[in-house]
Length: 114
Image 1 (cartoon, helix red, strand yellow):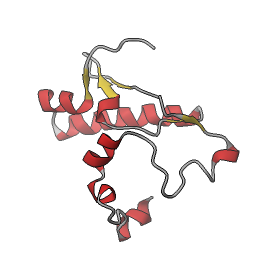
Image 2 (cartoon, one colour):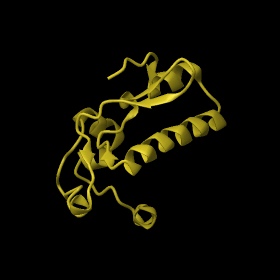
Image 3 (cartoon, one colour):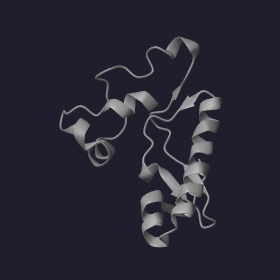
Image 4 (cartoon, one colour):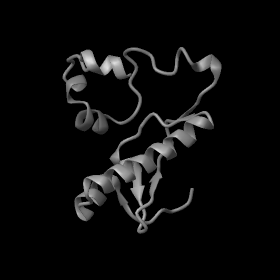
């Protein structure tokens, strides 16, 4: 794996304080990178700010594919299993407090757009 100079996404945003438009442009680049991985059958499964490095040119790089999985047609029904935990606990606590506390995470609107 190549070394990528830069900062994790959250630190970069805190330091650079980009405009909303800048954050959205960066988010679109991150989505393009994730989409490219998905098109090649790679599912990251631990995507969080600490696994997105922003280089000195402002380009995002997705890191740490340690728990990634290759998706196949046979995997489609078992990629995510109810009750299965994949990823890091720190990311779960920070990004999904309702799930960590055992509360429902799905509201009416979340299932509509999922």
